[in-house]
Length: 278
Image 1 (spheres, rainbow, N blue to C red):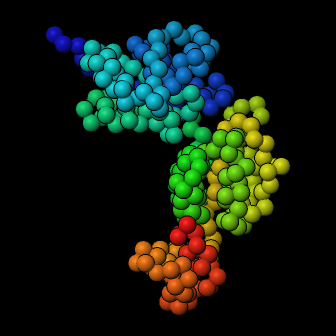
Image 2 (image 1 turned 135 degrees about the horizontal axis):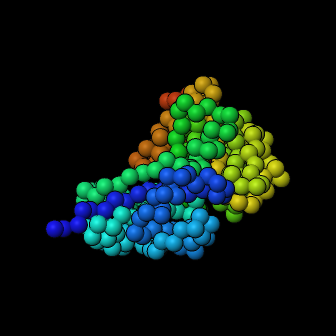
């Protein structure tokens, strides 16, 4: 008789404080046949702390698609598996999404345990509006992709949650400065000994206030109503300028067109045309 198909458990792990690993998570990790780990050394230290000895298989951003066949084979043999990342909830800006997607499409059972997540932890402690929010995660590291992502962020109205590395945190603060007097919470080293959450504004926070150590979660508060209206007008202007440039108009002519039909600043339209043409 064929083995009953195994289950893949998604197990959130502590952001820093090992006491945050739930009893259910400990029981699950101890009961599975294998653990799929982003970094087997890091996960091994956690398992040792709880006296668990479970074989591990590395599964990270660069190999998770290749691991799908291996994982499905183990599940077909009746093995239940646990998926963990280095910290927090797997698949949330961490490896696992492609694997889970493939398994779900093929009809395998996937069970997610609740647990630590830097985005929700930071949001709940930020004191900023949480009724409507968008999780952005990590931005592209550089180039046009990052520039475009920042532009989109500055025009969103709701509360936003971003992740950033210590290497780029000061760069990100400068990129967010055009958001003006929009509230900003900067969380660092969540749940760890040196946990810190700074409340400030995009146009007033300074690099000196933010020590570039540890992983960062940023909460960008919602736009005020007048800021949102101004942002919509700017987006309309940029769309018209972009269309004019695509139709072959010069930078000067595209700016003049936008200024005439949208009654916007000629200077701002010209600046937008220069950026879009470049």
